[in-house]
Amino acid sequence: MKNEKTGILDILILNLKAGSRAEFHQLYQELSLPMLKRWKVEVIAFGPSIHEDDTYLVVRRYKDLSDRQQSQDEYYGSDEWKLGPREQIMSLIERFTTVVMPANDDLIEGFRFLNEK
Image (cartoon, rainbow, N blue to C red):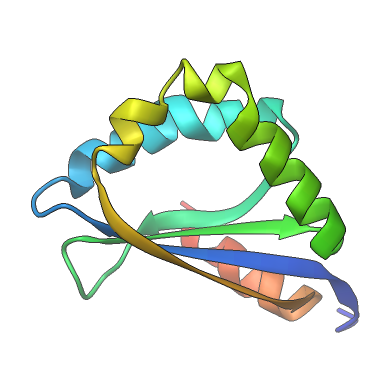
């Protein structure tokens, strides 16, 4: 595999309200993930942390910073999000941090491994 630059990764680390991780995970899989796919957001990996009960990870890939900004503005500004699962999901989040970094094939495959079954 070539280790070429392949866009950027948006790594979202969510600190959830105590005891809400199972509910958040279910909502994310049943509501958010299908909606992100409809909006053509490439979710590379998602899921609960293995070392903290109230931490959750979402990794998304974009072409570049401009693509990321446009995609997120459209998605989070949409009626589908605002009138849909936004309230349910946001009510379970205490705080979040985002890290954006260059991506390459190896890094992406490493993150994809997290959701292989």
